[in-house]
Image (cartoon, rainbow, N blue to C red; front, side, top):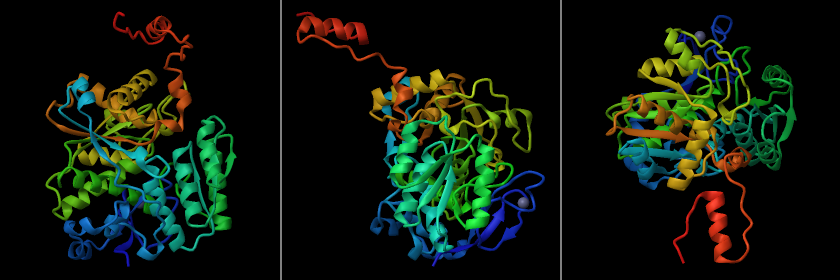
Length: 424
Ligand SMILES: [Zn+2]
């Protein structure tokens, strides 16, 4: 039995019974799209949940089952969550941070943070009796949808654009997803909307005519990012939490998780939330003091951070920044790729370009003097580098062919890598 009580609009507070809601709040949608969030019986959770219980529970997001929407019998799991919180001393030293941590989400079943959402969404798809699941995605979201759809025996149809990397689509198709290309994201929306209405597919996104966010039951899967970080830090929150942000599902979910643990007295404070963006619609909204997110002009739509490439964002993401006194900052392709190689070569973590956007922004904020040396800073690194190795290859030297002699090796290493062997 779940402690879920219903859904509530983040913007106007209207409450809804437990139901499928893929358009956000129906009262707000014509004025300004806003997602709804899951509500729970927190008195009951407080009565039942003890952190001491966790020692006996599996290392997955479902160790926090009291805070998640589905009934236990409907849980669809591939062992997602409890990813390592890695203290990065070498990288931290280079950035001038004594307590820098990476929450390495590449360790999830489909190698990205999206598994948390997909596990929670897919469990609710089973609970609602859906026949199939669907999402629109540049890659990670679709791969997670496909894997969990397969796990649940539901199957999936994924909508995407031709421009995104082939690797991502191979992954989705391997899980049995029917992947289709459409000309634009708006086309994906419209067709998804029609399929949800006509065939009853369970959608892991929104289908509002303006961005509302993701399936609200899935977004709560992201609360476990915050829960795990608190548990891994010894029952405290970091000072700063930096997240690559597009529609802000994991940004909002993490923030909600920290607040739930604060409310239950499990931690003493919440972090400042920092949005790392490709093009800066949230940065723009904060700078102008807007109460909504407007589109920003994009000169060049090609970016290595394609997983978070959007010229707008959501009400829920802006609300996190407002409520946490947060910051939004952007990083360029070169800054992102430098950080991807820096993280891999100094800490042994090879992450997707979009996934290290958090660290690229931390570097910039340190240089701007906006983060202090002693603070505990957690970077959410969302996905593994093998999702798009082609992007990395452009930033690496060609592998030299060397004759089998020490002299040829000396020459090859020096020319390709600037690496000088000791004299003979
Ligand atoms: Zn509303």
